[in-house]
Length: 246
Image (cartoon, rainbow, N blue to C red; front, side):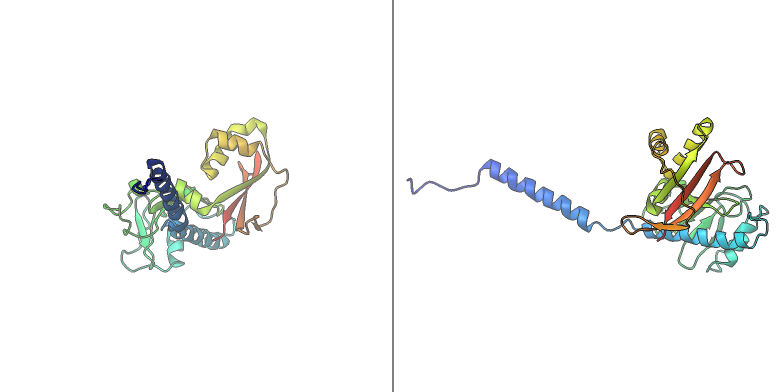
């Protein structure tokens, strides 16, 4: 054996080490990646909207929220708001209605046509990319999220990321085939999916629609149910929308 022969690392061994190092780094990023900063704030805004909308609805004897513009002022009276900026309940999607003590800013609550689209800047103007401030749809899904409020008290996320953060789930027992396009559009809107996703959902109906207000899934997540009959008094489909309750 040649005593002067040098022992070194082959190119293949170096590549293997680099590959393994890369895999470890990627796995570490996945494990230690912090939760998206506005996820919990978005859930909080959604829960807050559902709570105050339910309280407002309970004061209306006819079972629907008044369309006289009082939704904004009624919401204001139930929230912990700052004195500045002062409450502004004029109509308009970009009208800043008020700011909460936690920094959340609400827009669009003064509109009188339902569904009212409420936009919430969940962290004020503190998002790093929010250079203009105010109602800036360029920041939607970053720190600005929109929600639809219906006259029957139902609240639904509109922004794509809001739907993902809040984790909406649907349960539907049946639908009228003659209204398949309209029902599919409702499913697409709630789930934030396309025609293919909606068709898949509609082709796998559970057969029984629970009227329970809450349930837990296999992972122990607690959901709150908001049941609706699509298209009013003569429903073409009966759907329950379940929202993650945290």
